[in-house]
Length: 352
Image: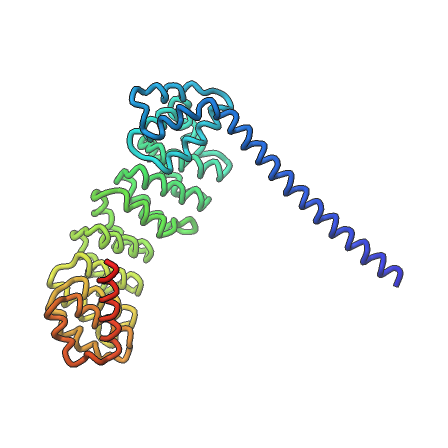
């Protein structure tokens, strides 16, 4: 008993001691962080006025910008860090002036070198700075960073390329999605590609023929979002033949947004009962968005579908088609799917 009690006391003391050390460590970290913040504020204080002048767009003669370029040593480091943060919030002339300060300080050149730093944190921050500085001369290095072993660096490189907006980087960004073991998240790639303008339409067409399903999804989605009608042949092929269901659904949605009248037939044949339910739903919604009256018979027949959600989507699509679609709802007014579709339509109209 005595031995057991002593052991328990020892364990308790050890745990309490560990907790105390943890608390002391947290306090020390917070104190160090507070001290660093106070030091940074003190160093930045003489330059705060010129910095605000530039950021607010009031430095018409460039004197405040010039004053910021004179910073040296630790003060320059603190100033550059604050400038990078400001560049996430401002655009136009003030941003250009702040970027000039970074260039004079050598921050842009240093960031280019840091893309090869051994620290992934440094590499990611460097990519972000280059993007915020719109350093288009570093596009080749940022494209290379899309193959970095760190996902944070890859994401930052894609983010930077999106900010720069050079269409020449669209192909590498799209290809990076399907890279084995080092793939770029589809959402990150899509966001970057959105900023690259109309010059990416052919890249998206090629992407819809890629072996990787996620690449095809992104290419199909962006083709619809950006109304790139030249990609319609590829979208139709994906809807009819792709092995991946998500790709087919994405293609259907894109066709609904930018398709021709003849695409009503293309979408309608995939509402058949032998198709996957999720694809049928996507095609019904696409028919409503396409807005071709030729889809009315198909949609009207689906009002009696055993899937209540599909019936509701069909009713909503008919309402979206205007008078010819509303006429097709005659005799179905009391059906739950139609009542729900009308309610949703009225709510959407009221909130518009």
